[in-house]
Length: 289
Image (cartoon, one colour):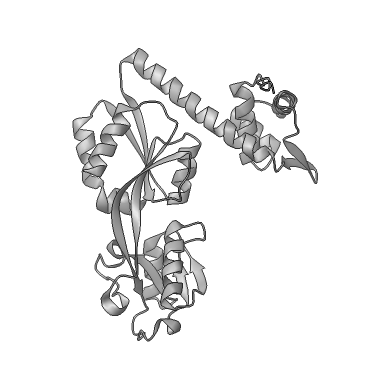
């Protein structure tokens, strides 16, 4: 069987596709890539012709991404990420400067665990413009996948063929009850205030609680540990937090039964397919050390 003819796709067409998949309307997508809605529609129509299948389907007065279009969008995101890396590498080689290093970290990594490594990196590599984005793990991984970040430190994600994961450190999680509440058997614990459903830490905590015999009834969510701790102090509910978050400051929480419930792993994550970056590898070595 002969190999299929490769479609002649352009980076611009793939950029149009990613914008159309992310934005709520074609008008917003056109604005995001700096073209008219007509130009965007024509570019997407040509992309569909070259791919050989419709990537969007009618939905009310507009169009939405078809189910099989999701895989094409993932391909487009990978191509755009690697093309962006190539453009930055070429610019750096031409200018002789290291250029920016775009790093994402969850708050506890940036503030509590790896601030020393960040300061040391800036001292040792003043030629590198370090750009730091602090956000939840899921948001950072999305940014990494689409090429907006070079290196992420977050809660270790599920295994993925497109990611290269380096474990950095384990962090204990503990159960915290509102002030004055006596902690009986795990079956009596809760209700819970916790991280959003997309949170890896929530999944780890929920699994550990269920194994301990506790019901995991969630009544409030926040991606900010400080907000969850404040809810516990106000008596809104129980929570599971990293010890470093819950037990610091002038009003620390006291763990139930004085021990840890589970552990989560913080990891450095990069795209498996990426251009060489000595600056990123240097920072990773400091994080590991």
